[in-house]
Image (cartoon, rainbow, N blue to C red; front, side, top):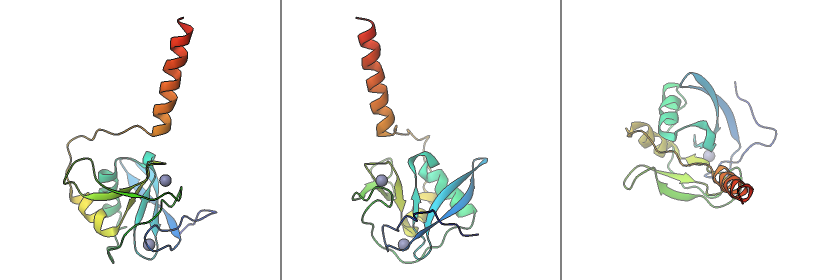
Length: 145
Ligand SMILES: [Zn+2]
Ligand SMILES: [Zn+2]
């Protein structure tokens, strides 16, 4: 079944609407956004470790490697995405949003990501969480004055 969000996210590569799919991932069902046209994937930062998610997507038969492309703006925040090597220099490249921490992955990148075996990943905290913790530390410090 294909479901759309009330405001469907637009694919950062081909601008087609992205549909919501449910994928079994580590005993849970997670929602991913996938472009109906080019097969690109958008993952929210909380969906899980992108490499492991890519393997779950592969298992679920949601791989639709089609054309290579490029990505422009984050489907969620509309800020330009940055092409970054995943976790390490020389790792498969994915598009990252510096604003929401989401990952936009072209089909060709998804294949590379799923094939890439990783040491246990060091997950970066979401920027908002980090800010919150900094503020809490600050408040704690004030209380001790
Ligand atoms: Zn697309
Ligand atoms: Zn974003």
